[in-house]
Length: 192
Image 1 (cartoon, rainbow, N blue to C red):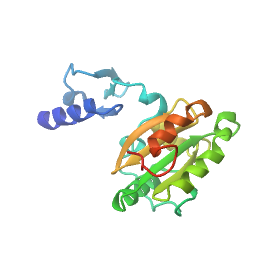
Image 2 (cartoon, rainbow, N blue to C red; image 1 turned 30 degrees about the vertical axis):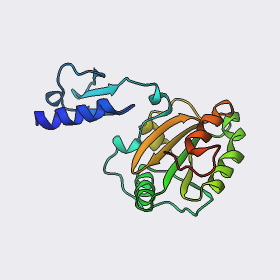
Image 3 (tube, helix red, strand yellow; image 1 turned 90 degrees about the horizontal axis):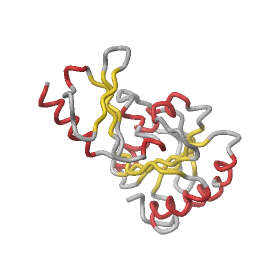
């Protein structure tokens, strides 16, 4: 168990942001880049603090590794809706199998910044038919959104090769950085 714990913690320290819930016996008292926080249930939560990516969320599959569901409806060049971690897992696995990527836009009703990027998000889906683009409505996907820890909307998550590769803001003033991440203004490149 100590060797497995060290391997898990080593992997966690290499990621931009991750939350691990481990029994206290599996977490060394100190580990570079990790901050232990004791919960009321005697578990230890270790949070990597190497970047501010957690402001825009972490991969919700970490909090719910058993979540399974059928892949959500999706067609190339269109934006679909995603509501659960199981649907996310299925979409990421399908995209990884066909060499594509998954792009999520977290939004909420009544958010002016969310509404102001809606058309550009749809255009990005059209320009990237190999990407699976989904909207995640905070009001309808609360469990999944809580698992991400997102504190700011709109936010985007990009998944490639089965992993979360970017968690970033998606408001109007941050759109160019998002478009660059997709590959040159939203056309072609593939969330690398």
